[in-house]
Length: 226
Length: 119
Image (cartoon, rainbow over all chains, first blue to last red; front, side, top):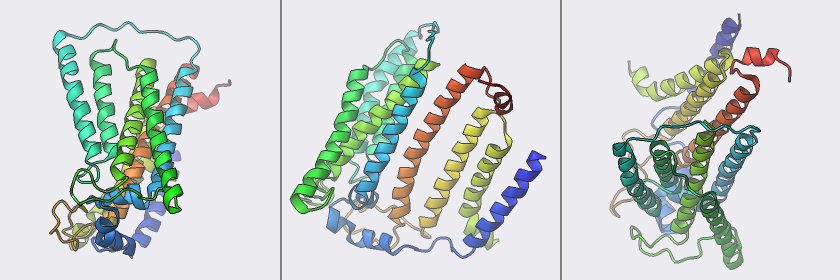
């Protein structure tokens, strides 16, 4: 009964969606604002990766909200999981030498790769969120391979707070200098150079630290619980 | 068959969305419901990206100054999906943590059994 009703409901949803989608052709340009960003983006922001200039510069305030959502989710997860009354520890067998050494060998390389991804966010595909996710995957590798090693909560919290603080402070400095929040007040430099695009690389590095430490703390909480 | 070739990404995206909705509506296991949420999330992301696609388009990155911006895909949906992926990860993690707590409290992940029990 429940299945029939839900399939009927899904058919209605599919009909409605396909009726409205029939008017949207595939593969044609649709928004005018996208065209504007492509034409003027490099000139106005200095970043050659237009997605980055949209995320950090044109819609920077939106990104601040997004980082806040991730922060609240990480806090909520920590609160929900650490409220456990009787904490039990499951004995784990130590990993073999090959696994242990391999994880410890790969960990710094993954960190360097993640850092590269978020430092070059304004030039190549990538950015703070992607680099942060790669760094968190390095921590996941350490947690799975060498289960007795833990990152210190203090360092993780420090990185997270510093990242968020840098983002907000840069936004406020823009407010002081030019009259609106997240103004790109630094010189834009030459396009395609590493030190270009004003505040975009700084904000993306801050986001990288914040996202990396938040995802690592989510992994830490989930592993601690299991 | 040109209809199918033209709309294959829309069809795939809405296939994923409908599969996710079906799982959320029908399944009783909480983990399966969360998996359905993840599939739904992926479908929405794929749909947004395919709306921004331009036929024979390239990535919106001026890696060399002489690149023409004529055939670049729309950057706005890509930026939105970048946002949506991160939010999706956060939502999934929060949902899983709630599932862990529910399991500790009730000893089961079956939604029907949880509904029958009292606090």
